[in-house]
Image (cartoon, rainbow, N blue to C red; front, side):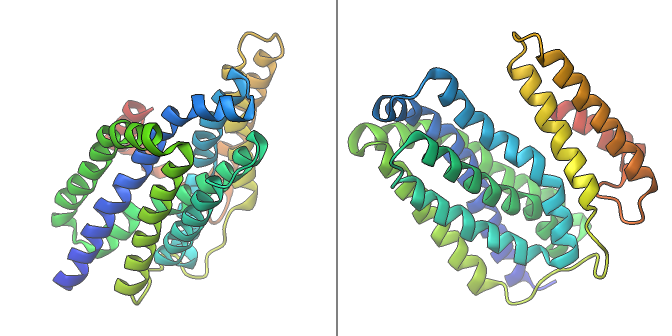
Length: 266
């Protein structure tokens, strides 16, 4: 594989890996100012944080599968564009509800990016070099987590919470231009296959039910919502065992390292 292509992918991977944890860790500092300006309740502010994680959890696997079918670079670049535009629009929010809706689009763009980033790295780097590449991109994640509260806090204190999203927009714009200019062809690993729509819907419903149920565990109805989510997740499992083109290849869980790695991550 071309060494220049590897370098470009590594630079992009580190840069993008910095972006999301930076945004996620810094936005928490802006929530009090958001609450004061738009007169939002503590519950609504917590839902702003929750919806970002929830949308990512729901869309991560389907969007990764779409990258396999339609092109990893294509979905990745669209994600950068959506993330950048929604970051800019967030700065012009006039209400908590508007900010909440834009946050959903920002999370969708983030899911498109990170559902395909590791796949792109795997496509560019041979097996014996992937460990080093993944290690370097992971470094970007921790730098973002460290600098998010510091730079984000300073930006909010000096310029206000809206300026934080101008910074996000600038970072996203640089990453999008770099990706479009440096990568001229795409990687499609499952051409002609179909996206499992039913599996995607069932996975989404189950995750929403389980997470929403645990989030509102103090309400009596939450237990039934959680049970409904577990039943839906069981249906998802049964369908994945039988469908021609599964959303998630369950044979991966035969690998102990894969299974225990996911348990640890959870």
